[in-house]
Image (cartoon, rainbow, N blue to C red; front, side):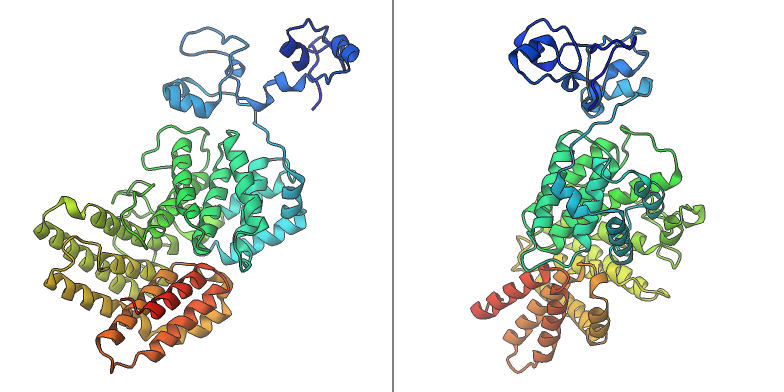
Length: 497
């Protein structure tokens, strides 16, 4: 970094060097090295004392609270300010110098040149973006790609994580690329660089961990993302924002980032309900994502604005439908968690109502002109979690057991009825498959194992074969499928219910 010089242009630094300041020695501020460091053969560094790595309140020309200028030596970063006294931000805008984190050579090499970044971006928007559209395509190509490559740490981190999520993972998903992305994310996030791009990178890492069964990292990463979103004001009713939102496209992107966290937070808990959710439950008046295609083009259509409580219709975006299903899964998880806190009669009434609501959404989704199978898979996951044996202290209740068995049988039969027809599509489009159906396939396999154990004459071998084939196909994209196959093998070996 070029050393600062005095405003008059003299060949002197504005302040003492780091070495003299640490040794409490007088510094003559000569450039490029002061006399003291030159005499003692010490490293003379003026750059460490410049405000390039801190947010400086002294850059705010006027303090609207006291009417006085800030002392020149007073430094504080905006994220810290939002926690200590967020009301200060209501009185004016800070001129915030950008923090910097050196980009390691290994990270730059993994990201590659601009051609490699464009290739990664094209693959991302073709394979991941259609079912998890929380990164603005318009802003990405219009702003991020126009930055000087590797000049912004948060953008470089986002490029790296897009490469991570689009790669076909090796047999061990904890590969070099994953380790580098994880460590660089922690370094950038830990340095106090609080931008939506850093948060989006964290969500992509969480998605990679969920899809490849990297636990408990996935659960912990999502918790961090939820907290990070709160810091940025990207949460339900977020009032304190560390950056100004100037366009409807950017506002929509922030909303989609929050919904992405909600979706992943619900899905990561479906296999073992009872853990606290990281993201607050959405409310019926919360806005859903708008039209996906129009948003990609940088257009926000008011006629495509729906709330969570709006009835299903063909004009809702694919992502909005998934958001609706995630809300129902969240209600199921909350119901299971608070199960012991309510009486049995109320518990049963809540369970019946939730089951009816979810089945109604599945039926309505199936009747749409273009059914969204991601939404339907999420709804099935919610039903299986709701009726999973062992989630209630009254699980031995015979009426409830029969109701749960009937519901689980209906869910599995609905799914299996169309499975064989979908196998060729899954093989041809393996790279574009989201991980939402993995838990559903696994639980269906367990249900049919239980049917065979209850009735030894029931022939379910073809169904079990199809489900194993499904998981084997998806294992080529998401290693969580292979993890489920190993659990299946263990269950069969132990003859577990």
